[in-house]
Amino acid sequence: MENFDDKIGIVLNDAEMTTINTSIAAISNVFMGKLVTLPAEDRTYYGRLGPKNEVFATESASIMSEQPSIIPALLDKDEFEKDWKAYKQLTGVLNLLAPIVTSMEDSTKLLGYDLLQDAYTFQNYLYFLAENNQQNSRELLERLKTTNPLSKRRSKKTPPPSK
Image (cartoon, rainbow, N blue to C red; front, side, top):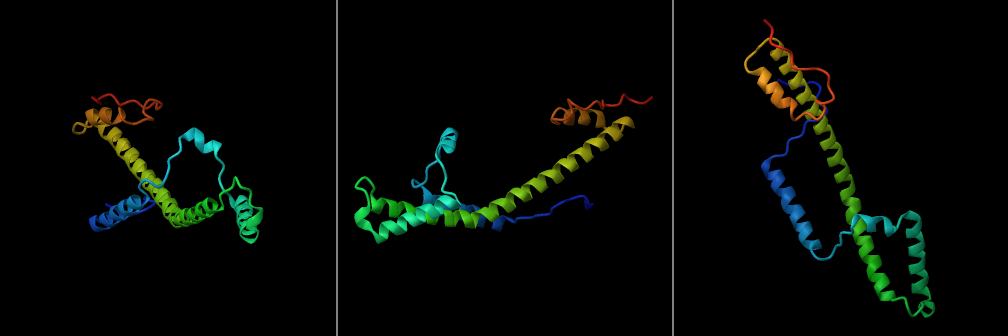
């Protein structure tokens, strides 16, 4: 039976999942030993090169290329150029991945919403069955309530057996 409240329907077959997992593993292998993962507290310490700062860094690179004689000795222009190239490469990859990640996050959000709505519908149906002493619905309802994070806040109790 089709649920007409579903917000999204998505099916990935085994071959598609294999392709995705193999591709991600290949990308991970390319980056192995090259990327860093900052601790959370360091992420706020280090700034990021946003659009305005990127213009500033681009202009700095341009001037350094035009006037190499004025580059201070403490600045390694070759290292700057390597960092700049790597930055552009990584932001290019991130720009390719960002819409995919956003769509995946939105899709999982809608899938989670559908799953939760279906779980609540199922729980409500168990309440109905328990009110009518159907099958082992009372035990199943109690079991389900132990996993529902909202059940402690709900005032609705399992109905007593009707006589």
